Length: 448
Ligand code: SF4
Image 1 (tube, rainbow, N blue to C red):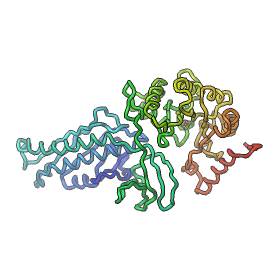
Image 2 (cartoon, helix red, strand yellow):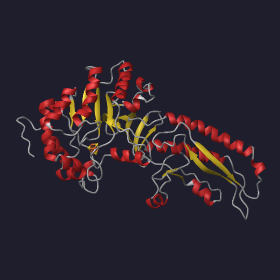
Image 3 (cartoon, helix red, strand yellow):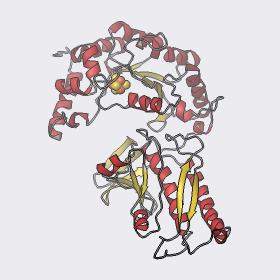
Image 4 (cartoon, protein in one colour):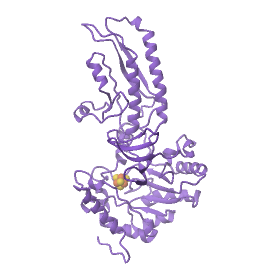
């Protein structure tokens, strides 16, 4: 992945495939100014070898932007000469940029750039130091402080959209940042935030409040945000307790899901990756939420993660997820509504969820269309089958009550290329048919 960062700090669209392929490990290229400078003989190489993780695009981009500022500013600080007939101009080269942890899935608190002054026969090394070096360090130091501030900035998990030309009702949207997206959120002249598309205003934007419990950490140093983040403006505690799915590989994983891709990336990079979130950590984080959420804004928790087709920690899926619910209900009886996003399990297993304290069950449809289900969720098709999946959803309604079984559709996936519908109308018609099937009035007559 190669991201272009222009001098104004805006991450541009990824470089064309051809160039990206020729630079497989390079993810930062500064253009067009740097390339221009190189042509002028005042070249500067800034490249960073690093892995990029899905879902961290914005963090990478933010990091890159800050480093880009550093690079440009330091470069500006050192105009030495215009070169001679024999040699190019003396210039400043970045020979390495590194972070203390080498982690690429978080914004580092600091980054170190190693600079090298390459000079021609118009210069003498002794003359270049210390004044030039001091000036470069001064600039670099200034930007190092900026990078420190950047480390504290995070894209919000979600935003609320309202108003605009369509008079939108307040809608909470989960944030996925893509530097190449035509949608932009920015500050308008009056200081408010707005969502725009190619310059045209679409909606007013508000950001979620920072809950007090995010300022606290667990005894082991983990944050509440990474252990038990809240979404839906603090309403729902989202507990991804298993970051690996046993539907594994191209013939089993759901086409829209990156859970195992993340796992593979971490493994490939040799990083420790805890697939299973310890129950104790979850309880500790929940204790902090319970303590500091004095307004009781958080009202529910969701247990979610990968599917278990055999066992994890010696437990089958219902017992694996159920043990978290059991521990939470024992420690905080009735404090939150318990939900689980899991496979459509046989009736006896769904009953186990209920017995562990789960009130709401999400055995997701993913996509309604029969052909697309087998293509997009091949593991579910193979292990369970679409019709059996639907049958189990109905069975679960007898256990939890119809209102408490809420299988979701992955909106938009029915249009995904190359197998999806050609038109939005066809996609909407298909998902609408699924919704109608869900809401078949009593006596329920479901066809399979
Ligand atoms: S079953 Fe769930 S976790 Fe597994 S690949 Fe599909 S969507 Fe992802």
